[in-house]
Amino acid sequence: MDRNCYYSNPCGKAFEIEDKAFVGLASLTVLSLSYNNLTRVPLHLPSSLRELYLGFNKITRIYQGDFNGLANLYLLDLSRNCPRCYNAPFPCEPCTINSSIQIHHFAFQNLKKLKTLVLTSTSLTNVPAIWFQNKPQLMVLHLAFNYLQKEIASGEFLQNLTSLEELDLSFNFEQKIYLKYLNLSKHFSSLVSLKRLYFKGYVFQDLCEQHLKPLFALKNLNILDLGINFIKQMDLTVFQNFNNLAEIYLTDNRLSPFVGDNNCHLEWVGKKAFPTHCHLMLERDDQLNPSVMQNYQKIDHFLYYILKPQCTSYGKALDMSSNSLVFINPNQFKSFKDIACLNLSSNGISQAFNGTEFNLTKLKYLDLSNNKLDLAYGFAFSEMKLLEVLDLSHNKHYFHLAGVTLRLMFIENLPQLKVLNLSWNAISTLTDRQLRSNSLKELVFKGN
Image 1: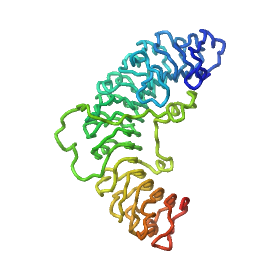
Image 2: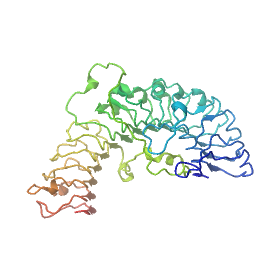
Image 3: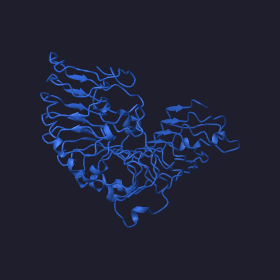
Image 4: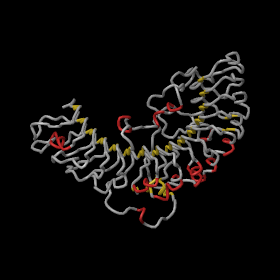
């Protein structure tokens, strides 16, 4: 019953649902009432409910008894009630003076089967630990687009979430504050079951080993997302402290080529905020999909950029796309010798590779699309003997220049190469008249 009264279908008043309206639906398991201008939680909902979606309404207060009788509920979505409206890409009305949704300390106490709780964009400034008492099955907690930097630093609410597998704390930055460091509570180490941690949009300058130390004890953590943080400098050796990370996302930062020591080798001056100018980030809601979803992974799906399954299927993956890595230093990835998938797309790389840049002997998938590569040498990429997929699409810069040497002879020096993408390069001429490969199975050449 979504979208009966909201900004794209205005009705000019609150959408009224009578108490007990759903009492007769004794077998109902999924109820979605999102985008309806509801001002309160409907009461006396059927006890059979397993999923309840109340996002994009105007609910300002959750009372202690609002979810009484819903002992079978395992998914509750309260997102975008009292939304964080800063840079929101949709018509957005905050609650009075940007206040947060008011949730009674015991509002969730009877939801003992709750597995997924979505509180995205509810303007929270604190997360009471008492919310999570007697929640032994809670596995997914979404707290993105709130004001929780101080809570992330104190972390009292994390102590009892021992079954939690997914935590989203993205876009909790303070407006116009560009922090020097990431400040994580020691209580992150209590999340012993955590598998996926999303930390986009915290906004800080430098990342050193001590800043991620609370996460080192998380043996089950396999996805860590630190994208869109405008990080300038990073000690990449920090990731050697994680045993089971399978996907590392460092996309859309300001990381530049490694040229020597960084601030991590200087005396640490503490976790300090500098009120300097920083970019104002946009909450992306490209599709504004309805709230009803097949499973929790589709909730706010636009937040979770993931690498292509073809890439991650090869093994450990690192995504450093959309940074400022204009050239590759051989020492750049010395801490990632075990990665099988690397995404360096959209970095402005204009280098002429000669077979000495990548000390990545296990790499099988390399994405260098949307750069300005200079394919001048026949031994480019030859150090990666196991490389199977190479994406060089959208690198047309040098193909446009008359008289420039353009070689694809490197293909014959890649004995395991199976897929080569050269599309959208406006290729009209090549220095070498023939392409040779004993292994290539797929050549993508459209847009030339």
